[in-house]
Picture 1 (cartoon, rainbow, N blue to C red):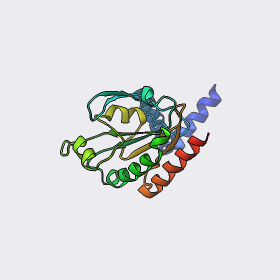
Picture 2 (spheres, rainbow, N blue to C red):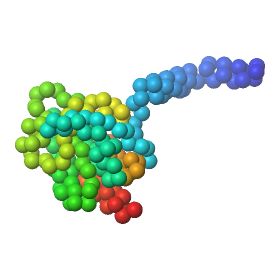
Picture 3 (tube, helix red, strand yellow):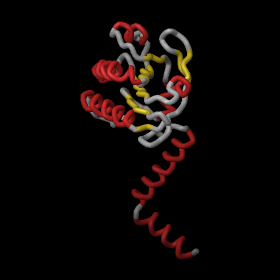
Picture 4 (cartoon, helix red, strand yellow):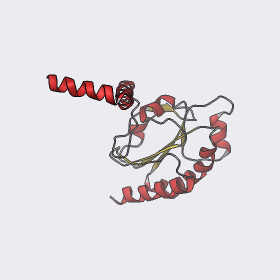
Length: 184
């Protein structure tokens, strides 16, 4: 036991900066696990949720997408990246809707300046728009917009938009993952 104490003491004395970083990383990891805000990554299971559509009526994600491939887009009216990505998602939706692929646009982190329903309808998007998705975004670990997930028929995430990827690459990747998932 003295050996371990001696090693730990030496580590603490010689590498205080490294030790402090490790302790902070450990505390951050613990707090994220406790808060339930670890991101859902590729291979993870998509969380279930119920949100109001723009109709308004409640929609249960698992029930609505049962046995289907789905795309979940976390967006906001103030987000310029969402404004350029969402028309691409409309094109993909129209390409795959006859094959049963579901698209969900989950509105998050609004600032109250623009009505999300009007924004969505004025742009003539035809996929499902859902309101007040802040808590769902937290469940998925979405910190910024746009967040994009492709989910297979078994609710496993097969694509997650990496930060900093442009809308053309997202469109290509989403299209590819849908095609691959439908082929299984």
